[in-house]
Length: 184
Image (tube, rainbow, N blue to C red; front, side, top):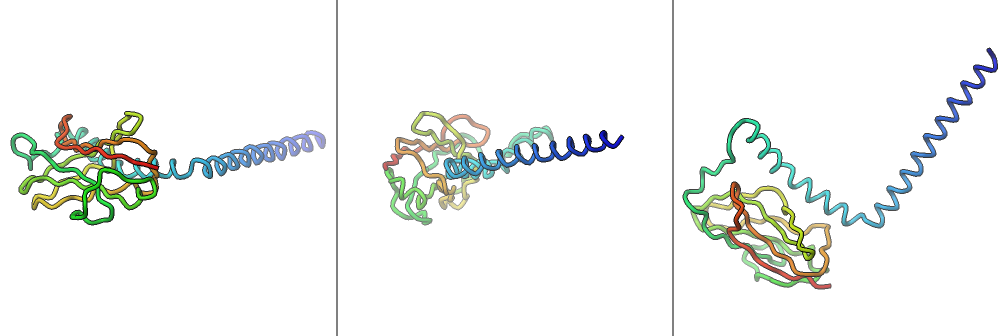
């Protein structure tokens, strides 16, 4: 009986130490990968977190049997202006080229004609021709003022050509777009 208790204790503590060793290795790998890929992962997580409210509201409207709220738009969607500025001012000079160093200062803007309150998303085409939604769902200002749709944030974009498109909710066609270049 004494040997059985000794064996049980050795097995228990051996298992605990083994688990601690595995956890230590996993933590070391996470730290190393975080140092190497940190900014890219943080930018991806930030973009994903910004898109969650739009995904939830779209999913909840589908579950309740309702359609997305397009009650504010009547007839065809008017053309919308999409542009970039350096700095958080909608009336600043529109840019079509920026360096990776300037990317943290660049803001995306969308402006619809007066009396047009339209829900929309931004679709960004990356240099590798892949497309992804940029940020959550936005709504244009009915007074005709430009809407701030965010910026690259902590994500440093790769050099190349980009395209930013405005896609009205419930539509698959673009209501406006702009192309811009990022240089090193």
